[in-house]
Length: 247
Image (cartoon, rainbow, N blue to C red; front, side):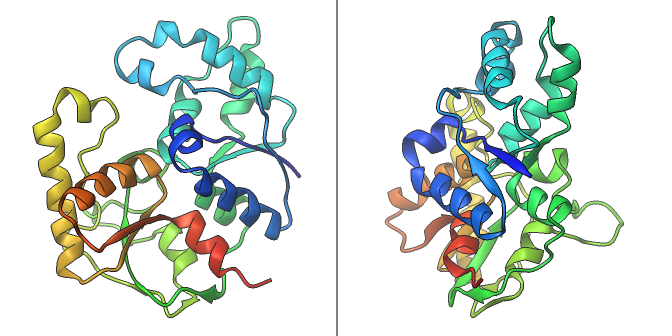
């Protein structure tokens, strides 16, 4: 299968190691991966702010860059969800519809398409898993705790067999961190308080790392941790899986 690596603009600018880890991990799992150099923002910030009509250029560019690939894989649930729900092109609507079905978040792709249920390796640290809202409630990467239904978590499943990794149980395992894209700018005080609450939950469990599938949420939590001068580090799940992977 031929995979186009879709990297969100903020990951490209601020956390390129996450992009590299995703690329390397997919290669280790036997995939042929390419990174289209002309890709830009998917248009999510404009759409979330009520300006979806301004994203037509983003949609056209996305289709131009990623239409040649069998699958499109991205280490960000929020950007994937945006493309799945909002990618359109008046002249190529049939192609846009097909591409909406072929874009996947990283852990979703590994478990649902590659059918890999566990990755063996070593990461001897205590880790807290932050379930981002878009991934959990939009992409169904894990079960919501308020539902009376069997629990599942695709990210947790991949982390469960890594030697030495202690995945803690949080008091409120799927609560929002408060980032919310432009929400953290327009409602800064509420956003920060929500992030502080999430960090308290992780701190109570004595974590060394907070991981997750959305670098945007982790970036928000990292900013609060740095202001608190905390020793807790943030790390994207792609970095854990890639660094611990044993072929």
